Image (tube, rainbow, N blue to C red):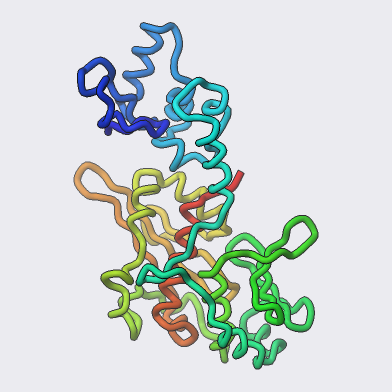
Length: 305
């Protein structure tokens, strides 16, 4: 590949076109090893970015490394300006935007919050294993973190130091509210695990509503170790269902199963998402789509250093 570990695309560089400079390639590639050897031989030293990526078996720093942008970028003369690195740091700390299948921004209708206010909080918590912390406020564990549903103030909140602050997380907010509105029983889990197309509304999951597995494959298709690290960071439980498979729990009584098969020279990598069939008794297809996409985003974000 012509894209280097640092992110520079050598396909659009005239030095590469003229044959004056070869691509460094991804950090795990043979091209990287050749480039490092040539740098050592000709320059008496190597690019610290490429050497780090090669040593840590990381293809692309910006995509694959939880410590990007590190000192190898900020103290070196190239390839990016400090302004660009500051932008990366800032935006990596922000929640990615949430879009519906039609491309619109996700918003939670006030009527949903009104419906939720009518629920019996104690009964609702018994069914979901959410924890009531005060009248109108319940806390649940989303993957590896505590999240508050503040029913009175119509918001999700997360801990910052010792305070709960409003969290801009519309996909999780929407699905959480719908789940709490609809739950009316304790449903069995781990007994009837199916794919989304096996659900009653399975026809929904196609075209613009197809699950977003391509980003998972682009990031982890040749990096099972990275996938395992991300899933375990999120509290995932390893399952013997694929080359790498994990049960992840966005809610205490809701499980999703992410399966990954590593690609090779003959077959491309594959990814699949399974779930407990009873989920369709509390969430419609579009809400299931939203929940899976939200957990997928968490896997793509990976461990936060």
